[in-house]
Image 1 (tube, rainbow, N blue to C red):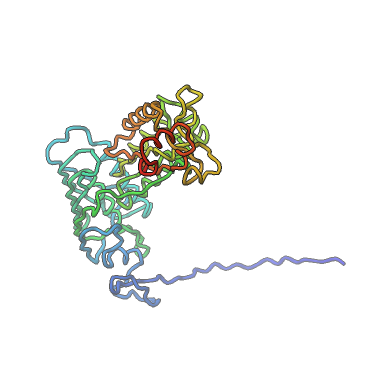
Image 2: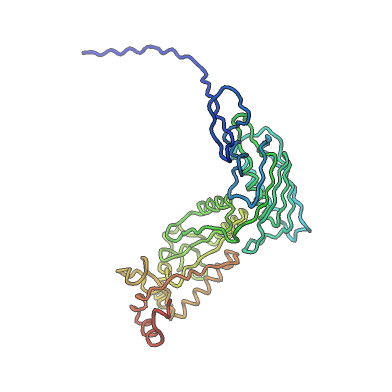
Amino acid sequence: MKATFLIAPLATATATIEVRQHRYSCVKNNCVLQPLTSDNVAGTTSLNVCELTCGQGSLWPQPTSVSIGQDTVAISTWSTNHRLVFEGKPAYDVTPLVSSFKSAFSDALKFKAKEGNGKDIEITANIKSASEVLDLNTDESYDLSVDGIKVTINAATLFGYRHALTTLSQLVEFDEFSNTVRLVSKVTIKDSPAYKNRGITVDTARNFYSVEAVKRIIRTMALNKLNTFHWHISDSNAFPVESKTYPNLTAYGSYSASKVYTQADIRDVVKYAKTYGVRVVPELDAPAHAGSGWEWGPAAGLGELTLCYGANPWFESCVQPPCGQLNPLNDNVYKVLESVHNEWLSLFDSDVFHMGGDEVHVGCWNQSVAVYPFVKDRHDPKSFFH
């Protein structure tokens, strides 16, 4: 049996489907969807604009104090005029750091929309200190006021100025009704951190992150005004950092040749982080959690640098596999540590250095023919190592 298929031409008609725009109004500091209507109802806006002006707006983290008006003004996303005024002449060139702040702000605006048909924002920033030092005592406070397209920032330091630009970017959104990028036209903000240390810990020893992935985390931190990237960079699992004084640490401690942070990588990350108001605090894990990367001592004539490495069953020698505790009776351990500490201090340029302080496991010492007799003759092992 033959089957005959007839394909008939389909007549197509072009028709424009009119989709009514959803409108929102601010009710008790919440944007509430209003019933669909063909009329422009007073007090209703697009969701983006409503969220800009309702309650404390779209600001995160919430500033110390904030006053936001109900009106917005169309702005350009392609050009912003910055004018910086310092109290006294900067002792050195701050142009690279300031340029990075401006660039990040410009990128944030362009992320809202590719085009903005309004006027250029005019920013005047009065900055007390031009110091590029970023530590626990850095004053990150700022005041921000917006009057139409004119913005005034008063900041204690360059990093307060950076935070103010981040806040300003959160006062901008694309409005689908007018097809323009809008800035809240009346704003007064005073802000300062509630805590000096605001950060996250990232473990790249157990799970290697590429340099670009680390930078992506830092950019995300900056959007949330976090200022401390605690880099848990070594552990029993890996020692993925280039050491020029003891390259065996890297050779034995890396997952692969492609999973190593060179010293150039680290300097790059530290410099990059500062452009986002983030300082990098390194952690060298010790005296426990020191396995991979420390096992080469005997072959190099330095004796056992780590004890109980790869012990099985692991739970008799450490709190997690692979086991590894630095050998406290080997003087070469302290020489290697001193060298690594000096290398890292020069690389990270941080006022804080995290020395690990990880727990030792008494079971490991009990298995050591060198450590156990030494401790047994002098102290109770548990009280000595805890």
